[in-house]
Length: 554
Image (cartoon, rainbow, N blue to C red; front, top):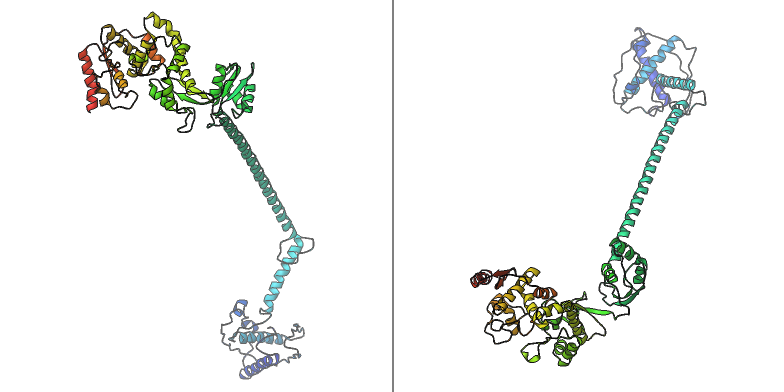
C-alpha cells in the first residue's frame, strides 16, 4: 500500500487513473489467468530511493474478476487519514490490493520528478524499524529497571554509571598528577629562591668586603690627625677610622687586619688620608704614631737616587702623592735653587749638622754647588706650613740620619764625608747592583792607590751640565777628556771637588766596604748595563770596542 498524501496527484484523479487502467487490462486479457501475487516484485527501499530509474510497465495476465467497490471518503488533501485494514475483505481483494500496490509503485517510479512523500518508505520497512526500536527498548528495560531514558538508542544507566566511575577515576588520576606537578613546581620554585637568596647573599657579601677594602676616596689625599688611644682593639680602631671618614667600614677593617695578621697596633697620633688602603693604614699603625699631633701632609715629593740638585729642583714642584696627572706642589724650581745656594741658609745647616758638613767644600774650591750630594734621595711629605727651606732641611736631616751610623767608620778609614759622598756619587752612576757597586768602588781604590786618576766620564758630563740630561751614546763616548775643570777626573787625581749627584745608601756602603779585586778598568755594556772589568789596558780596549764602539756603529 502507498501513502495517500502526494504532491503530484490529487486523491480523485489518482484513483480514477488506477481504475481505468485496471478496466482496460481486464477487458484485453479476460481469458488470462490471474497471476499469483507473489509473482509481483515489491519495490525495495533502495529501489525507491533512485528517483531517476525508469521502470517499464510489466504485462500482467489477469483473470476476469469482479471489481471491488472502493469507497473512498472525501477528505482534505493535506489531511492524513489513518489506514484501516478491512478484515472482511476477501482473498481476492487481498490479491487486488497487492496488484494495486505494485502498479502504484511502478507508476511512481516511472515519473521523472522524484516523489516527495512525508512517509517515503513502505509500511513494511516502517514496521521493521518500529520492531527493531521496540526490541531495543525492551532490552534496555530489562537491563535497567529504573525509569527508561528518553532516547531508545541512548546507553543504559548502568553503563552511564560505569562511565561516570571511569571518568571519576580518570579525574582522580588527573588530579593526582596535577597535584604532583604542582608540588614539583612549588619545590622547584623554593629551590630556585633558596639558590637566589644564597647566591645573592654571597655576591652582596663579596662586593661588601671588596668595597670595604678599597680606599674611601682614591682622589682625596688630604690627611687628618687621628688619635688612637692606648689599648684600643682592632674593632675600636676600625670604628674610630670610620667615624673620622678615613675608611668605609670598621667591621671590614677588623676582619681584614685579623686575616692579614695585623695585630701589634700602637697608640699615638697618625696623619691618615681617605686615599690610603687598609694595608697602608695598618702598616702605619704598627709603626707607631707621635705623642703630639703633627700637621697633616698635603702631598709628597719624590727624590730618586742619583738625582742632581737641578733635577731635585724640578722634583719638588711635582706632587707625587696625588693620583691626578701633573699635580703640583706650592714650591717652585727657582725658589729651590736660590735657597740651596744661599750662604746664610748653608751656614745655618752647617751649624745644625756639624758632622755631616765637617768637610763641606768651600765656595771658592771650584765646586759647582756646595750642597750637591748632601740631600738624601727619598720620599718627603709636605704640609700646609711647609716652606722650601723646611723641605730642603728635611732632605739634609735624612742624609745626616742615614750617615750617623757610619761617621766613626769614615773616620777610621781616614776618609771624609765629602770624599765618601764624592766617590759614592760616581759608583751610583756606574753600577746597577750591589756586587757591581762594590767591584767598581774597589777598582777606583786600586787606581788611586796606584797613583792613577779615576778616569770617569760622569764628572766631565757634570761639569758640562749634561749629567742627568738625556744624551746619546755617541756623546757619552766622545766626551772631552781635556776639559779644564776640577771635575775632569782624567786630568785631576783624587775624589774630585765634591759629589756630582745624591748617592743612595747602597753606594755609600759600597765605598765604605769595597770588593777586594785586581781590576784597574771597567766598562758597561751600553745596551744591557752589565759591567765588564779588566786588569790590563789591552783587555779594557777590547771590551770598549766590543761593548761600546761596535754597538754604537751598528
